[in-house]
Amino acid sequence: MRAGIAAYKATKVESANNTQIVLMLYQEIVSRLVRAEQMCTAGQPILTWLPHVHHARAVIIELQSALDDRNAPELCGRLRPLYRWCLQELVAVGSDGDVKHIVDVREVATTLLEAWQHVARSSAAA
Image (cartoon, rainbow, N blue to C red; front, side):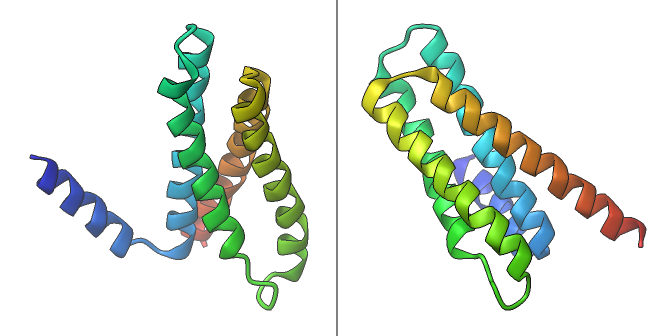
């Protein structure tokens, strides 16, 4: 069963365009941070929810490394410091366990996800 799910996910990513991949990455960030936030708020030990924070951080690092100043210098110039801030906040949550860091990054990631969804809809309509 897991092999089938993995194959489905691999096919989904391989057949996606760049905008769809970015959407999937933001969806993953938001999903992981929602889980971490819920677990933290429920009083679960940090070791149970911190892996979700680490995973979200890894996805942000991937997005950061994919920035291409040649194709979109203004967009990259705006996203780079935002990604840096998100990473700092997610590192801080590991230090102090304050759910506010997770909430703040989730809100930013949700806003970016919504913006990319708008881009995807606009591209599909064109």
